[in-house]
Amino acid sequence: MLFDMDGVLLESKEAWFRVLQAAARHFNKTDIERSRFDASWGQGVDADVRDFFPGCTEEQIERFYEDHLLDFGEHVRADAEARSTLVALRDRELPRGVITNTPAFLARDMLAWTGLIGLVDVTVGAGGDVRPKPDPDVIRHACELLEIDAASVLVVGDSTFDEKAAKAAGAPFYGFRMGAKSAAKLSDVLRYVEQRQV
Image (cartoon, rainbow, N blue to C red; front, side, top):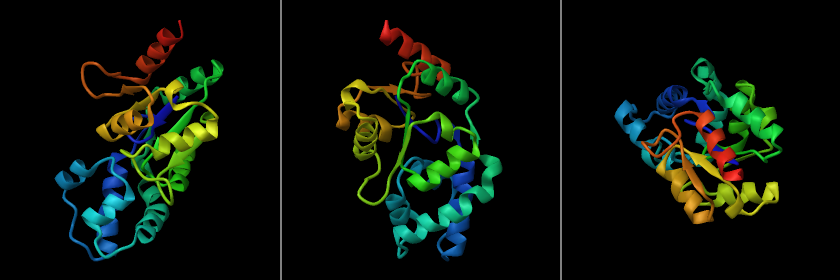
């Protein structure tokens, strides 16, 4: 199973809003309004540079995020059912990965901050040669690391970025808090997996 991180395993939207605001001040860019941030939620660093930090490099913005996101760590928390869901999947010996548009080093920091890092087998983030979702790179790379075929992995995500990436990778997708036909909580995802294995 491959999980998107922000909005699925973790809730960190407020921390991201605050670090983007801090980055805008640091790099002397226009203040970022909540509505602009909300419309961009889930995109990669490359799009952040394009939309909020013109004239900066991806490396500069990634470094700022790495240095300062956890300054707002009180706004980063694990979903209430994340630990129990990951433990249940581990007990069933199902591979577990995190796929995110957050750079991998920062994603690992966030998973460690919330106590989940030891419950996932791989963490793949965008950056370098790994393009952000909706490109399928993060899914394909996670599958390579787990030595499984994309068609046999379930991608759980909360955005159209996740859904498009799964489709492009040839992986089944299960939406999380995306409307009536999606999971409302992580225990719903666990029940869905159990039903598929019967």
